[in-house]
Length: 186
Image (cartoon, rainbow, N blue to C red; front, top):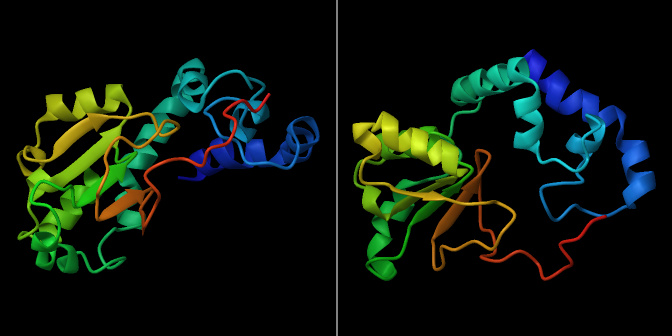
């Protein structure tokens, strides 16, 4: 965990003053020209493209993501039982939870273990296409009924009418659409 914090956090943080001088004090709205890419001298590449340039960092990153649940468990963050109890209050086919950037489904698996009455077929796991393909290959029995959907975080959320969306282990109500601002940051 230390190396990932150093490589993917501290290195870009040290370049923030230069990044903001170049791009201004605004939030990035696409996956390139970010503080991370700028910090690693590849502003025109997204996070994943940069990771492929450094296989040892990619290995460290993947290992850290696999162990993150032990450090930041999903259980106890939200009363997921409430969603199961009120699943009938919304359309019968409406997704109940969308896990954006959900990796290999670790968070959804914990939620389903905590609340077995939650209808798994109404949960959606979203991540990059490569990750979703890996999840399908692994074929974890607990995640079989979960809808698996490739999704680019920087595009409009295709799942509408959901009860909850989770990102990076934080449950929060999030709009279905990014704010209508220019996607060009350079």
